[in-house]
Amino acid sequence: HHFTQPNYSRGPTWVASGASSGISVEQQLDEAAALAPAADASSVPFYYRHDVSCGPVGITSSAAKAAATRAFVRAAAARNLTVLPILFPGADAAASTTACAKLFIDEGIRVFEIGQEWDNEALLPGRGGDKIADYNQTVYQHLLITLSGMSKGVRAAAAAAGTKVQVGVNNGGWLHYAWFEMLLRDQLDFDFVG
Image (cartoon, rainbow, N blue to C red; front, side, top):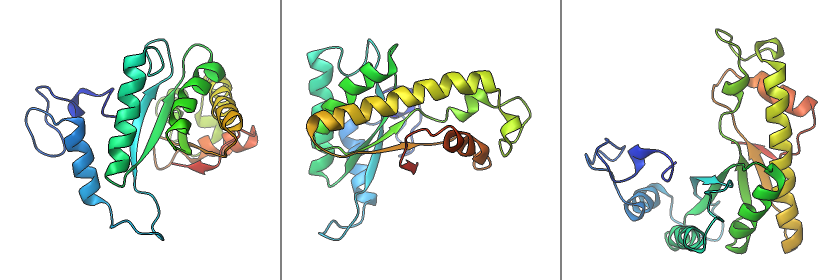
């Protein structure tokens, strides 16, 4: 989450590397690349997850932000890393996500996550997340509509580019498997669990 959480950026906060003043994006990429296995023709991509705002201040809101995002994707690729965008929607989930996804697809990215641990938004206080009854269904329905719009947006960008993509969802707790049961029951169009 290096663009949205201060502990990954230059600042007064401790970061995983132990640097007391934060580390630059280039240093983060170097550290991630050092963890990656040697790349060869048979290896699977080594992903670096990356928050992406698709809203009014997101990566497509200015030429400078779009250029910085492209530079980040290219810098990762130069280190044999594949950026895995975690998309956060704008007001119109489908339209804003389409524009964001197009930028990444143009850079060769084919795998996306939509939302980030949104099961926690619908989880009722004190519940474990392993039962559908553990979730506020009104909140869940709002999240489902947004996730559905985001999935459609990513797939629309891929279709316009004549390519295929994979769309993933994730959760915020190892026991929250009822979240996925609900998404499957309601036929959210996703390919993997991140």
